Image (cartoon, rainbow, N blue to C red):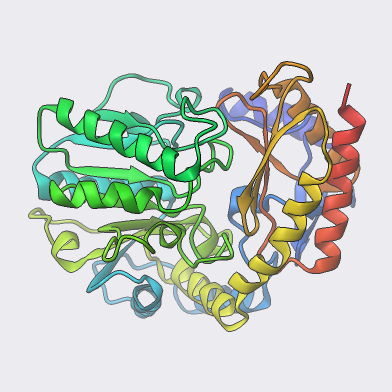
Length: 434
């Protein structure tokens, strides 16, 4: 069956709102290391990892072995029974969490993890008021759509929460663009304090991605969230750090994205951390880390049918141990700057901004000669996506206007692969430049 025929069947039976990349979509049939092959046998260097999910490598032997062995024993039991792989994974996550007195609840996705975090915060604080960053994305459930600040991903205005949005999610198109980092932080803190003064109630929590994923890999300067935390702590407001895309060392400098924000703020540590994607390396795995007093605050009975299943927990544990044993955070710190420097050296009239940390890089494309910051150019981003595909490179796309290329290869990327991907990216951008 051709990819064209499979695409026709996809559109016939699946929802029309499921986005599919490329004018001629591809079926990814297999993968190994940092490469994947489509059904026609063409090889691609994977610089997106299934939306930052293949964190270590495709077909990682340790994960394949752990899943196979666990499947041969038992695949499912639910949380109603003792589950050794789930406990061992939770213990490993707690050990690297940097959260005091941590407990871990495992889910099947980042959406479900953020949903659970909101339940904990609103229950403990007895409030449905939430603070979030503009341009944010936290999932596709009813509750997480309600706090998402990126309207292109929010199909309904109905909400279980009263949400207040504050500045700080991105600098390039911010009203505070052009300020120094210190001035930017001061302006965002002043905005936060103004919103708090006007909220008229006890806000439950502030939720933020240290680097916004769907928003186009945007962020405020290091230290911003720590400055926010100092204000929030005085009012008893919880801080939820959404690490679905930034966790596990992807940013290179830190294991968790929030750690870039706390050096100047003492005990500024999130009350709740959510995670997903990379920890499972493609398995449906997410979760919540919180101080015990927060995690244990629910008064009703609860279970999870699929969260922390023996199969996914065994695979995720093998994946996490591989990441730690091979220090892939350092590898991200080693190869990320070469990609960033190479892209910034391009000096293309359609590249408005190159940003990111480690192996999490965004390239904002703009229409030439439209001033600063430049008019968003989603059509150019789509054209580059097609051009990289022709050159055997897979990248992602995002941003509020759909004009940002998202670069996030597996953390085991080699120097040669980084150079290969950079060359394909540069050539593709040059190809579509008017």
